[in-house]
Image (spheres, rainbow, N blue to C red):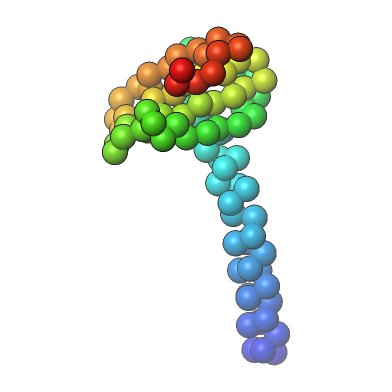
Length: 95
């Protein structure tokens, strides 16, 4: 009985670890979309969140959030509202 429980625990642990990266990435874009909506921006469906390493600094992260209706550049600083810029279609970020 104890051996069965140990094997079950290991299988559940490995299964949980395998899906954690996808859930973390999904959670990030969802959290950014929630923050945008709280600040009055429209993000119908968050599709992708990419960190902008050129604009990011310690305690000042920059992200590009692609939603189904628009793309935003979001700069987050702890305990402050995010700085949000709508990225025009056809323009590349950072150029």
